Image 1 (tube, rainbow, N blue to C red):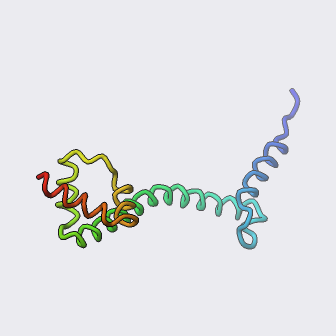
Image 2: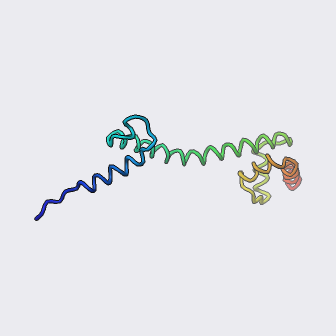
Image 3: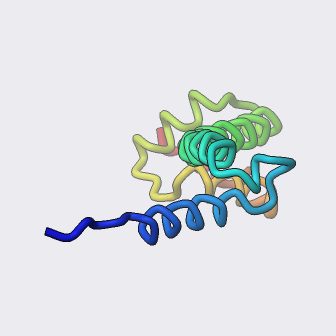
Length: 117
């Protein structure tokens, strides 16, 4: 049986890893061993960052809604409780956008929710 050399497969794998390391500093971009470590860590950080981004944006939206609620004489907790109980369909992202770009409409929404309950 003939001997199978894996040079082309290894070369392809190394090229793929070095391509992912493009833009890194020093040997991290040019030597396979250093690039592999850096890319593995970078991919792990990117994965974690995608999860954290969702949390961060939700916190931002809640903070914005809370600030707008305080300007209208209530707090976030009471407003959201009454809003969801009254069957509100807007999510936190849209509520925060409404609070930023159209404060009068958000104020009327707060007043409407308070009068319904």
